[in-house]
Image (cartoon, rainbow, N blue to C red; front, side, top):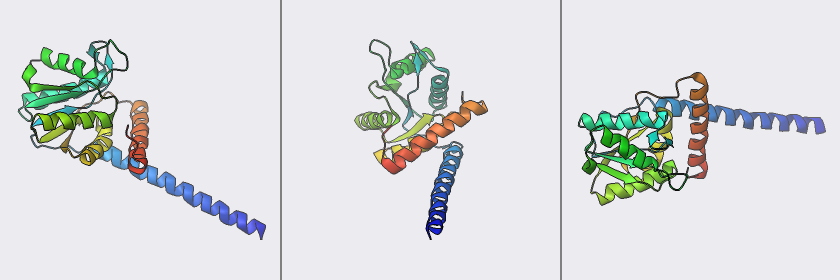
Length: 201
């Protein structure tokens, strides 16, 4: 009798674990696939999600996002660029300010740039961008980030109430299998944490 109970319990545990693994796999597939979705529409502004800055220079990952935003502006698909992101250390340029510096150096007029220098997470990036969009009487935006970041970012943008379309970078610094798989693992975990627990990262 006891052995049957343990067998039944073992089967239950196995099924629960299998469900978790399969669910995670499906979520990872959706995160990866969504990164291929790209809107061809124009919008009022591009919202560039923050990434690391090295002093007054963008990190390679951030540079890819900045380049994408510049292309959107230079091809007439957006008329404003919103740079987001604060700094982890007082006294350093914020991610948004580094983005602004990069854009100005590449010919983007100052009047076309809006800054959020306070945010430290994707949720804060988008929440603060929404405030800037509203204050500037803008409507639609293209969200610019790495392909694997787009599923979580776009879900948050929708929940915040942004009229947003995806504009993932056409190239990524996460090109090796090691870095790509680590980034996919991280983004899938954060996406599920947001969906299930509404963890605002």
